[in-house]
Length: 344
Ligand SMILES: [Fe+2]
Image (cartoon, rainbow, N blue to C red):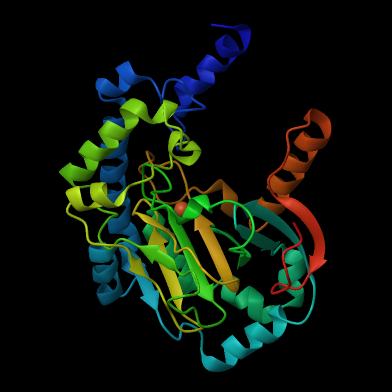
């Protein structure tokens, strides 16, 4: 054990009680002996039981039919989410003018993130109303099984099939070992051939078969050549999916103004696109410590922090790059149109 490992070891122990997921970065989470003796299995089981308990409290703000659909399938799907005039106002604010943005490339796919700090929301009331829509937020909280402030931004997904390697997000995967949510309000139609989001219905449930699969993954994940798998975002192959008794992934081809909110403990991915496509969406994330019994007490909802999380994170990452040379994956591309071509 070197000095760095000795200094980091208390942190590794603390991380077991939180949302840390990477067997590669945290040698305790990746330790085969600990996992044979139930470390990963226990984390997954306890997190699922806690999520179920918290959802009982959060479910009161969701209509019963939508909640029943989510509980069975693992996602909400709401067509015509915004009233037509509000949706047109949103598009009028989003398109035709540049916004400060960041981009990240994963193989053939570039993801553009347009942050929405209070200064941008203040100038774009329809965008602000959409970002803060209480119905969307209630679904996001229920899917992640936690209360609090989701992280939101405009997202553009640009597929360039003739450039770069395979996009790792096209492999079916779970984002982490516990309930967590992602949400998309699509600003235009997304067809079957446009590389839509896909999701395996019912795969958010922790069945005995899923728990066994999680256990098997935990024994070898730290040395798996698939880097996202080794980082705790476990990839699943088609055959394994069948052995878990799960149906094939459903391609979410949707009309403009559809909101999808998914628990991305469920297996999901981006469908590979054979043609160049650009998809623009309002996007939210929400992930918290899965072991806390309460749904509130959210630091990210405090005045001064609320809606500034992304700006703060970017500042820290930029500083780390400048001072310590740790390259930041989200490259600053200046002000660009949300549907403009990729800059990186
Ligand atoms: Fe994912």
